[in-house]
Length: 363
Ligand SMILES: NC(=O)c1ccc[n+]([C@@H]2O[C@H](COP(=O)([O-])OP(=O)(O)OC[C@H]3O[C@@H](n4cnc5c(N)ncnc54)[C@H](O)[C@@H]3O)[C@@H](O)[C@H]2O)c1
Ligand SMILES: O=C(O)C(=O)C[C@@H](O)[C@H](O)[C@H](O)COP(=O)(O)O
Ligand SMILES: [Zn+2]
Image (cartoon, rainbow, N blue to C red; front, side):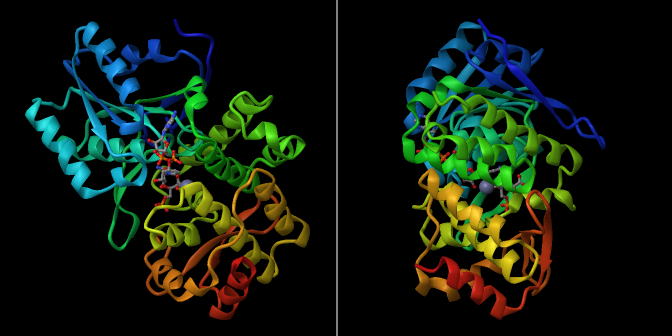
């Protein structure tokens, strides 16, 4: 039975279909309503780590009369490849998936990015539902319709905007999440704090140890606040023609670090270093006050997120950053802060400025 859940609406403006993000416990009772009428087949895409969850969900859907299949994906970033997408297309083709059938992505951000991408591309777009099972998936990846895969040249370079029909954030899923992954997700929560909702930072600073636990006093509030930040931004600018770029705070360097580490760093850990870099860039550009720049280090370190990266890698990182999606021609663009919760774009910063900011994160 579905317990009382918090419902956050996304979209519904500028011609986009509205959908809801539900946050609570035991939410799977909501799934049939989201799957909708006249659906014959449902595919459950899940990572290896959630094999039992994926199979249980498949059995549940089969018991409800759907032709349900489970498609197991590799864990984490290994799922976000053209080969894995092709494997899914083959499974859907062999099962006769039509435009009236539905995909469900159950897992972390890597799983929902891949599941959403397969849904966006199969028959040029079928309905999909996100069931995020990590902090990061709940507060960021499953919301907003950015789907995609990586290529040899970099992170998320191929993808589509294809919003889900609904997002079910069952907080009970977080109980099995390794602490390393839990903390990684906090980087995106903290990002939401710096770009839009400083109350998030106050809550984490009030008890950093509790912030690292699913049973922490403020867990639900932190997750809901971060979702609201994301929902508001993507509702105003689904396709990133302007405002949505603020969600990329810290990501220009983060994606370059992830690629450089062959995706052995979690996304959130890289975003943590990327935000320290962006804060220094803002400070050096004369936009961000010292106290807010320093606060990045203290709040990120308080939950155990990294602040530095290997100093000898700068030329490679700079090269990779050139293919960041915010770049225009040869001009690099960064999200920086003009002050707390005042994100803005820094266009084509001087190379010396970038080097100086890099010196502040170089280990
Ligand atoms: N589309 C977007 O808007 C958006 C936003 C932010 C991040 N992302 C993407 O999200 C990805 C990172 O997502 P993530 O941090 O959730 O990592 P992840 O999806 O790689 O998951 C981390 C690990 O945890 C396992 N896992 C997932 N849920 C679990 C659970 N409940 N219990 C035990 N293990 C579990 C996974 O199988 C994986 O091994 C990156 O690829 C990033 O680019 C996308
Ligand atoms: O939703 C967005 O927009 C974001 O930028 C959120 C980011 O946290 C997320 O990592 C996103 O996948 C990055 O997108 P990209 O366009 O830089 O690949
Ligand atoms: Zn991110």
